[in-house]
Length: 134
Image (cartoon, rainbow, N blue to C red; front, side, top):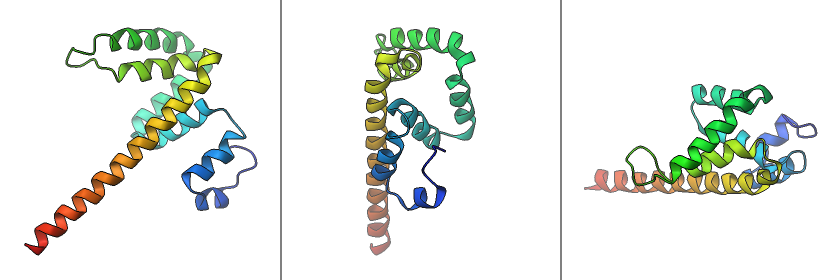
């Protein structure tokens, strides 16, 4: 947890307020990784944390380059355009000038994902309520 933000005040903050508080303490890429770790399953969280360590650099860079190359094969069933942000996220950990734009892109995509999940939950709740009335 960043210095200067205590747990009690962090729990009362909205996501944008928490982002502003964290942004003053660390860069956007670190914030994006932190939020990404909260969204994924625990097994994947451990793997992401390991990839963020300095000793994982020898794995992170080639994997990021392979993901970017794989994104150009988007028409194949398993590979897709989602490989591009994944590859950029991996490479940005080591390439300083990519940290800010990739961090902002990841935060934007995470916000859109959260909004989509909320929309879907509301839609399912409305459909369930209609089904009960019928």
